[in-house]
Length: 343
Image (cartoon, rainbow, N blue to C red; front, side, top):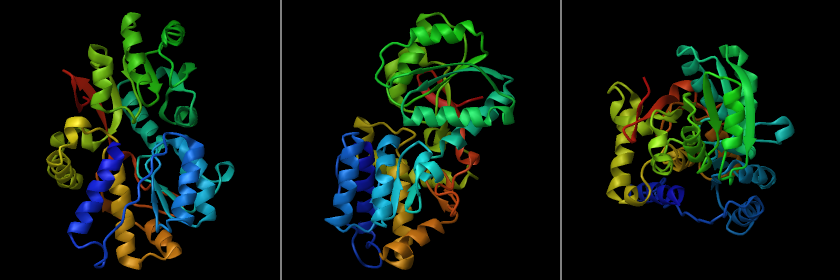
C-alpha cells in the first residue's frame, strides 16, 4: 500500500506539472497479494490487455522472479521495487534485459555492512537468514564477499518468514561464540529475532538487513530494538546529512510532499518509501527523451546517468540494471526509539 500511495503521488505531481511532453501519465494499479503466480498473470494483463508502456514493481523478490520471463517475452521495460538481486542477474536466473530495480542490490547492502563490521573489528559473525528468495540472496552474497572484507561466518541458521520464534536458532549461534549476529530478512521476523535475543540474554550486537529500517521494526521489537544497526537509504536520516550531499534537498522535498498528503500518519517514512518514486521518475525521464516505443525506452532507461533520487544517485549500465553503489547507503542505529546515523 505505501508503494501504491507513493506511485500515485509521483504521477499526480508529474501530471500537475504538465505530464510528459504535454501528455498525462495514466497509472494502472493491481494488487499482487504477494502471490508470484498472480503477479505473472497481472504482468500479462498489463502488457497484452492494457497495452502499458512500462511496469513498476512488484515489491517482492519471489514475485519479481516470476515476472522476468513474462516481461522479456512481452519486451516491456519493468522497474521493480524488490530487494533481491536475481531479478537483474542473468545466466541461471534468466534474461534481465527488460528488468531494472530501484532498491540497492543485496550485494551493495552486504558490502556496506561488512565495511562497517570491519571498521568495528567485528570479524567473527553468525548469520540467521530467511528461507525465502530474499534471505537466500543475502546469504549468497555474504558467503561470496566475506573473505574480501576479512569476515568469517562461524555459524549459520535459517528460518521461515512466518516463524514466530527463533530461540532455537539463536541458542545455536550463541554457542558458536560470534562477535556479532546478522539477521537477513524483511517483515516481522526481524523484530522477533531482536526480541528473542534479549529474552535469551544474548549480549551481542545485532545487525539487520537493508529491508528493515522502518518505524514498524521499532514498534514490533520495542525496547529490544535499542542499539540494533543496519544499512539503510539516506532517507532514514536525511536531517543528519551534510548540506553538501546532493540527495538532501531531493529527499527533504519528497518527505514534505509525503507528509502534506498525510501518508506519514498511516505509513511512517521507511527505507522503502522512495523506491517507487525513483522508478517512476527514471521511466518518466526516459519517456520524455525518446517517447514510448518500448525498445527505445528500454535503451534510454539503461542509459540513465547521475539521476539524483530518494534512494541514491543512479548510474545504470548494461551490466548493472540498478546503478547504485555503497555510497548510496548509510549505517543506522536504533537510539531512544528512533533511527540515527550509527557511530
